Amino acid sequence: MQLSLKIARLLVLMMDGESIPYSSVKAKLIDDLVFENILFRKGKHRKVIGLINKEALKNYLANQLQIDDLGDYISALEEKSSTRADLVKITTDSKKSKERAFKGFLVNSYTPIVAELNNERFVISPLPGSFTFIYDYETFKIPKEITVVGVENAKNFSDINKQSYLFKTMTPLFVSRYPQNQNKDFIKWMKSIPNDYLHFGDFDMAGIGIYMNEYKRHLLKKASFFVPENIIDDIENKGNRERYNEQRINFKINEIKEVKLLELIRVIHLMKKGLDQEYYIKTE
Image (cartoon, rainbow, N blue to C red; front, side, top):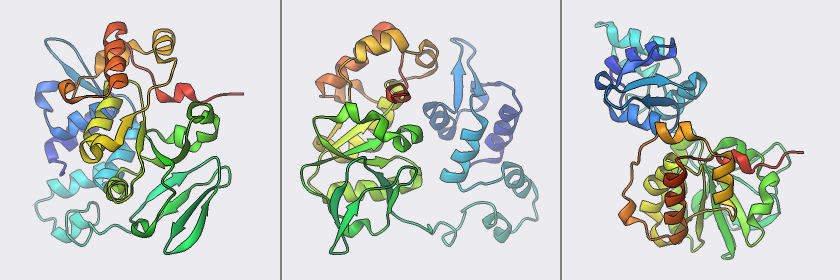
C-alpha cells in the first residue's frame, strides 16, 4: 500500500486537529485507520474524518508503510527533483528496502511451555517485563494440546498473566498481533501446525473485522473468536457507545457460523456498545 501525496497532506491537517470531509479522503488507508480506531468517522449526511490518537497514527505509518517522518515524506514527493534514492531513505518504495530485518513473531506465556526450535528442546517462560521472539518459526513446534491465542492489543499481551482467569480450561500460548508486518509469518506457521487458534481482541465491530479479515479467512475452521462468559453484562455495564457509532461492519455476517460470535454481534447491535479487551486485565 502506498501513501499518496494528497492523503499524506490531509493526515497532517488531522494531526493538527482539523476534521476533514469524508468525501475528500476516500481511500483504503483511511478506512483501515478507522477500523484500527486511529481515525474517527462521524455524521450521517455530511461525514467527517478526524484523528483520535496521534501517536497511534505515527506508529501505524512507521510499522505498515515504514514512514518515520510524514513531513519528510511529503517534502520528497513535492520535490520534483527527488530521486528514487531520496524516497528510499524515508520509505520502503523499492525491492531492497522492503527486505525485513526480522521475520517471525512475539510469543508470551504465564506458564512454562516446552516447545521445539531447530530440533532442540526449547522452554517458553518469559520473565515479567519480557517476551520471546520466534525468528526461525519454520522449525518452531509446540505440543498439540496447546491453544494458540492471538492477542490484538499490546497492553493485554504484556499483562497476559493478569488475565489467566479467562483461560482456565486450556493451556494457552499467546501471540501478539503487533508488529503487524509479522502477521504473514504467523499465519504461515499456524497453517503448518495442527493446533487450534483462538482470537482475543476487542469486543466490537472493528475487533470482529480484524478477526474475520486477518485470521479467519486464512485459518478457517481451526480459528474461533474468544467470547468471555459474562460478556453480555460486561458490555451492558462497561461498554462504549461512542465506538459503536464510529465503527462500521467490514465483513459479511452471513459467512459467520460460530454461534457465540453471532450472539456477540447481536448483543453489540442490541446495546449499541462495544467493549475494549483491556477491561479484562485485573488490577490490584
